Amino acid sequence: MAPHFSNAIHKKSSLLIKYFFLFVLLFTGSIAVSQEEFTNDFIDEYEEFDFYAKPDKTNKLSRFFRNRIDTRMLKEIKFKQKDTRNQRIFLRFSLNSKKEPVYIKVSSPYSELNTSIREAFEKYDINKLNIPDINPLNGYLLQIISKEGNNTIVNCNSTIIYDRFPVFEGCESVANHGAMRKCINKQLEKHIVKNISAKELEKANVFGDVKLTPRFRVNTKGDLSNIKSLASTRNLGKELDRVVALFPAAKIPAMRNGNPSSIYIRGNVSLQIDSKDKNYEDKIIKSKNPNLKTDNDLALYFKQHITDTELKDIAFYRKQKSIKISFGINKKGKLMEVKTNLRNIKMNAKLVGLFKKYPLGQLNIERATVQTLYSYNIITKSTTKNVIQCNDVPYTTVFPVFNKKCETSKSPGDLKKCFSDNMSAFVKKEFDSKLANKTNLTGKIKMYALFKVDEIGNIIIHKVKAPNPFLSNGLRKILDNIPAVYKPGTAMGKITTTKLSLPVIYTRRSTSFETAKPFKTREARY
Image 1 (cartoon, rainbow, N blue to C red):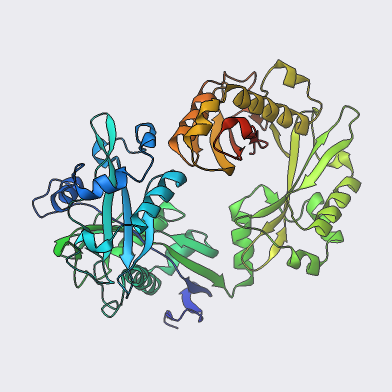
Image 2 (cartoon, helix red, strand yellow; image 1 turned 90 degrees about the vertical axis):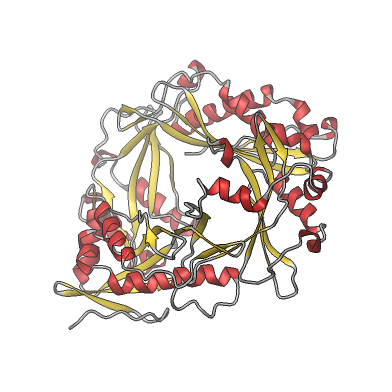
């Protein structure tokens, strides 16, 4: 039987692989785009943008925004981009059939700044932008803020930028900018399903929801180049590159202000791989983690006490892939702090109850310590079923020890709480109360930090997110000044890096710090 794929969303398509079938179901994806590489005598995308936009810090639009946003924030803004030419904040929008701005988005990481820019733009007379081509197929771009030397300034377009996606076969009759984005991704999906190798899919041991990220550039002639796709394995990525290279050139290239332009496309394709071979799914399940067994003593014990209906009805949340049970062991050798990551109260109680009845001596635990957190995988989520799978030996971790006092903690939970309490106390003590007066927000102001404790105990900040740069920089400064912890964390008996997050909630009831509540830090999380 020859391979065949259906492009209909609700029909399964089959692809012959050796002696069984894989079924591929298309899911809706999306594409991200950015202007890149230009051949119209521009050195790079920055020169092209400035050529068309002609940003000017003294023009009417710059003066309008400067009078309506809190410019105190500007000097505090931290840009991720190292290239100073790319240190800019943009506002993007489309126009609906009534010529009203819709889908307004601002590119800064600060929600308070974004809101103030968006609200100011909504009050601006759109006719004053003198848009030469009002068309639902266009996406419009304004620079609002940029870097000038060491200063961050309001520096808006003198001329509006209007962009169009390239037009590929099958998308000629698309009516608007957003629909064109979706159509391009849809054509990519159809093309990939039609051309991807069943053999490479089998080699990659993929099953269920398979994410593919085709990435390529469309030049000013509509041709594809710089194809660098992403997939679950390197070889599958190469296969995806081969398939993308066969994608027909655009019938019309991307356009910027009426002229051909180059664009970078990052697709998002999701395939649902299924099989008629009953053993194929089990093979994939086992290959994902060879340390998990379906037939060891612990797995067989749970299989005896969990019905097929109960197993089938277990609901996983978000991106959760497995149900784990964790616990500590006290000085008397008894279980403590037994819990699962399952949200179903009834089933959670059953799993905990079953585990407590399991002979502790059969858990292969050596040299138990009160601060060690032990965990077993119990149930793994597959595409068509939930599977009872357990490790032979427990996975062990010890949370970082913040200070010498924390070393006396009598359980894994106490050790973690001691770390969190000390982090919280440090942040509250060092918080600059004057920062509260540098925001117009009231109520609960949410911030968070992603950080890690490295192998020598240093706290390394990965990301701090807050509504405005004053709060973000203030929280980062505090965390940067926290000294190295007393001991780093361990995993399976070896010193390791521990990734953590620290949510922070500051409750502000008025514009004065005196009537505001001090902020809270929630427990640091793995």
